[in-house]
Image (cartoon, rainbow, N blue to C red; front, side, top):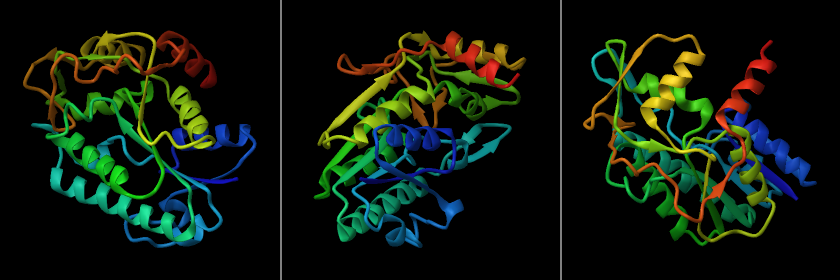
Length: 265
């Protein structure tokens, strides 16, 4: 079975493709760097020829989705982000239907249903709705914050070298654990619904950011402010936590950090 993984060339796509190959299937990692543009459709039909499953990892937010300013941190144009995510999803689903793809797997973020009216989460919710309404059999995997993405969260919330974060709880997870679940999902029947993944430990967002900055030798100060947005959305304490049916991944932050440090020695 041929599976196409659409990503920006980062570690999540690489590890997802490797996981699919471990299941005994053919995995192709494509991105704009390989000449495939989901927004324009350029190269998409050729990339998906003979493909049975498509894995779209373009959902979770990044610093590229806005403009970093010294005064206000990350400023997001909600309408532009929504148009980009929805146009990409619509193009992808249309080409999938045309070439005979049988399963669409999309990566999203835990909390979308609670934050669907604000910021980047509004765009993610619209993307999920497009997928649900399409005739394509689908699976949506919602992830909590990745260990590897906490630097982006800190940068997005930095104003004049001070990080302002909402008093929210998170249950962060490793990129490798997310890739394992996404690869497994791609190799089996469509869920026709949503499945969440989270790490094993719950921690306040500000405490986790402080820990990550300390481990990286960073010295920005972190403060709590209930008005501080997360990628354009205001947060209540439990908005980013998974539900009771979430898959709880095994890797703890300390173990991940030890492995990460060893790999860079």
